[in-house]
Image (cartoon, rainbow over the protein chains, first blue to last red):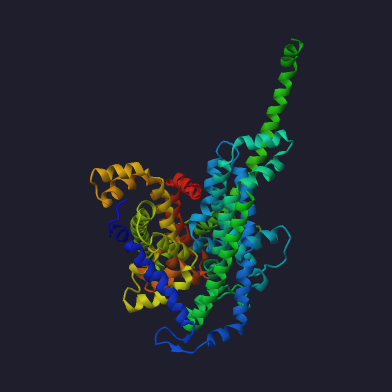
Length: 291
Length: 292
């Protein structure tokens, strides 16, 4: 309203901008620089040009990590399908259903390290899963689930899915409750059975929630670390079978102290995240056009 | 008329048939709900049962032994001897509380002018913040690590509190909430001569209390469970938070799983209590995240 300059808005913003400048923007610029250096964090970095990137392209572990991270994105469609299903189940007006909703939420608040340990114990050689499989006769000798290269990543993904469903289904329940009852009535008049009603009414109605969950769960999947760390006991699994981009970044930077090389891995993570964000935004825009 | 008489005669058995059918459908739904609950809760139950198993109880047997024959709390004593869990707990409380309080403060201060004031550069700042949302935190770890070492706050709680205060996501949630505050109220206060700071604190803040609660709860839980960054920043055992301290139990895995289970139980129970107490706010906050 007044044309007079006021410092007030900037003062309100100052703490946030200072923190974001120091802890987000400076680190991004610094990582770009470090990715062109050889550096062990302790001694000053030495400029080496694109050497790290050349090394990265020729590094089989890096390709393994990149492949694993992309495979990990399969958790997103699975989580969406299962948590929409669960939301439809717990959205029924049944007595005591809120207790069940709370129980389903438990893995989401318990913390990835605690649930990772719980799962490692289940899948241990001497764990519950082997014990049950042997006693029903499905197995003769125990399987070393987490030492089996082809099983590490699927088990970690299963863990992520298991921990996420209760959390994301809360978002879908809220979405379902926003869908007007009349739409379901209209579908019924058109002769839809209850499954068809959900297909034709619930799914389109949940579109904003589906887009939101697909964005946050795919960004989370690209950053997976804790599950791998616990399930593989910090090793990344035999033959790097469970190594993801963030796990490899961590290992190179903080275990092997190849910080310059790790910075190059971080740049790949940034490009990957940007690419996914663009895909997600496109998807969002296309959805809005259709509605 | 004929019809009206016919209804009670046929209606009674029909009503009964319907209600048995209803009962049957309800029990199918409950069976499904219980089955899913078993899947989500069983790993925790198994940990809890393992943590109270005595030395003569089998950890591995076929079929698995569910209940301990010889229940004991000794394992809790073992893990408390091996690790300073009360200390981890205090560190976690301190770090998560400070992170939450400062996050709410910083985010609601930054969000207010973005929602309610007009000034040069507002759009530019807004889009800058939007862009930082997609940057993975892991990307910043190497330079942030260097900062912590250079400025000597490495191996202390500020090292994990400070970087987490730069949360564009919380600013967005708060901005959405402030946009819902009626302009008339703010203008009226201005006419009365109130300063912008007072309007923010005394008029706008009380009206966005539900969003403040959401931001606070989710910031607290995220901070409580945060692992990777604290594990890099807190090498000294006495400075560790619960998840970082818990990860130290991984090396006990094969030798003494009863103690590992006791450690996990002790760390999960506090956050579960927190969740049970604030359950409604969790659900409302998460459900409302997309509105506004």
